[in-house]
Length: 360
Image (tube, rainbow, N blue to C red):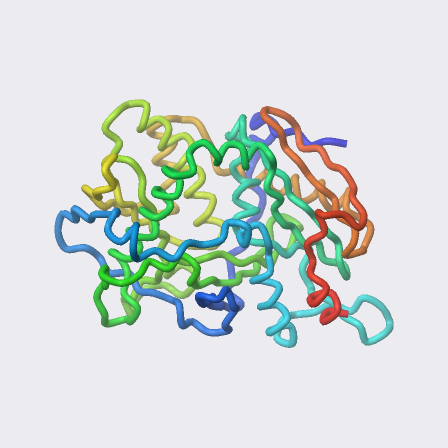
């Protein structure tokens, strides 16, 4: 069996996507430990003048990098589940007292973003590992060889661009609700704040986490997760090919990220090639599909949501063996359908023993 990735197969009306309900949050410290509090949450500070932010400041001497391999695991949300499982709605698996999470899927926002953008990313390559454990399907990411090869030639520039994004956040955020940004300190890419949301897409119930850059400190701001703000940087759109690429692909990806989590605004720093932010613009997430339609007439949100829903149905049909040692690997190559393979006791296994034992 395979699943089509052609956008024209998903142009029908969008499936029901319930309001995202925040059921918890957690912080990560410099040692990658999950802390069940909001200590790493930051507050948005709107710039009052033309910014001219230098995103290079501190790159060589005040930068703590994140280990990329950590992003390929889902340990953070698993730690949070164990710490909060008594508060999560559970379902009875049998006549005994054993129970499990009352969700069809547990994953992270990044994995779902891959799915939403797939119909319009013709040459994207990805692999998602799925394990069924105690009735719930866990979705994790597997880094493909193509992805590793793609990063290798441009590792220096890639690292610099990553830093520019973190530095922009430092210019735009304060650690306290009444504070101001402090751009003289260390940019620590490891420390982060995450929210955990539950929702339903068509007939699929989901629990997933996502990193949040900051929140609106206005007392009249909407309740979470709508009060959160995503911060982004991108090149100034001073050439037609840059505008086209931005509205076709980058804005589609940004919309998917924020829409999934229920974030309402994306604040964007437009920078030049030297890493100087020349202007800041706010995009309302709800307006982004209309903006893209006006600019490029290329992608539609209903196609994105339909593909994601169909993929989850495909996974339910395929991944039936309930065993943490069994992994169903769903893969998408360039301009191809989604296929799958089954692996037992392999290197693709991703549910840690400590999680399996505690849930049992």
